[in-house]
Image (cartoon, rainbow, N blue to C red; front, side, top):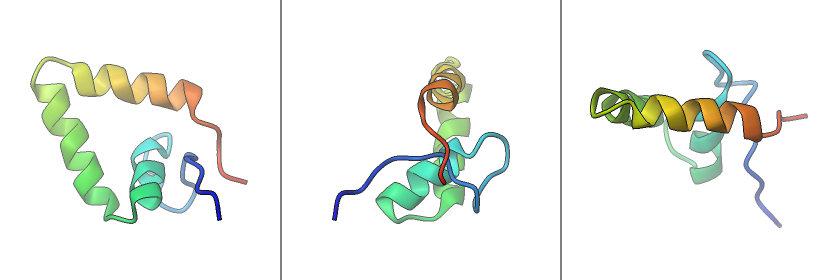
Amino acid sequence: MHKRLYKSRRYRMLCGVCGGIAEYFDIDPTIVRLIFILLAGLGLSGLFFYIVCAVIMPSAY
């Protein structure tokens, strides 16, 4: 079976990016959200990456 990266509908807070990444790697979405917050605090790279992913990642069916 081929895994695909989608924005999550179930674990969505803003756009579903962190939830989709968490579903893809089978980890808790809270961990992914904390990583994004830490990256955003260390120079806004997390915020930039989140926006890019929100635009590029397709939504789940």
